[in-house]
Image 1 (spheres, rainbow, N blue to C red):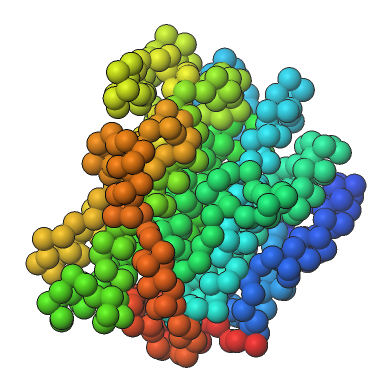
Image 2 (cartoon, rainbow, N blue to C red):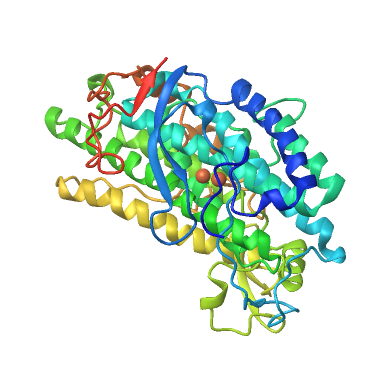
Length: 472
Ligand SMILES: [Fe+2]
Ligand SMILES: [Fe+2]
């Protein structure tokens, strides 16, 4: 069960050959996927890339590394191993056996959750498609492509569920996942952050740090699902996802490290003229990506999400490690709110209604760990500067603060004050132009762009100057 079958057209560990109808349906979706990859995926022509491919879902040795042509990447369907005794951990059906089929009454909701998750996966590939042309090193280029092929595989993961469990509606939704495109005027991706451009590598690192981390938290709640195939799919996706966040965490590390070197060398905060990215610009990019990622968690309160929880479709982060009754019918939670006098405050609601807030808070404390780590680099260099997460109400377009303008310190502003001051907190055209001007490709083995420090380690034990990518 755990070893992937690579003799099949679609590699899988779900015994796909036993269901000819499903196999044929997925095999007819496959060329559409490849067409999408060719037309919307990475634009830089490559001969091959040193990529990891999943070969096993078990704890040991799950991936294989080799140079492969990206078009021939073996995108496949891999579910974590089935736990036969697994029971529902929360909600109205708590302690009942998990579901191997979709209960009729939850069909529409489950399909919606899968489509929303599925939509984000190809979206990020689209957002990042032009970055290869300006990669700071072959090591970084390889990491970009690794993230891209795995997001493609995550699309496969969701499309498998749609085809296998949702009949004709599911097949239609699978087609739509290839038709919507990031930033498209006619058919954009479903969620706002996935229609933003990723025009430079600082944005890419911030995206993989903050927005892929949102993905981690969404997958974490779906991993708790009573619908077992969804749970097992998400469990395996989380394993791949951790590399994406590693790319973000260490990418920002290396930008900060290089900036610090230039600050010390030239005794100035303004490292722009020396080919670096000033710390205040890094902070602005952080502010932007963090705030749009907070929006992905939705409104502070949600009856839909309360129903998802009660029905067993979607749990909480680390559901099983929580010490409450896992039903939450009598609990309450304080959620962020605009107070009656127009200030920023909190209000008490039923815990079930506040589940988005609960998840957003878990995410926020996780985000803080990266900031602490980046600040250690500043501290170690003897610099007094610090990066920080902006206030939760800053630059929000979804939820309680959507119509309030708030500074990174949590100060409520008038529209006029916001317009006048937002250039101090969010990237301006000048900042973006500077960052883009630094994005000159470095596609030579062992070389690196001047705005970023080299990584401490290569991939899979290989050195930094390894030939990670062969260009076409
Ligand atoms: Fe993903
Ligand atoms: Fe990801």
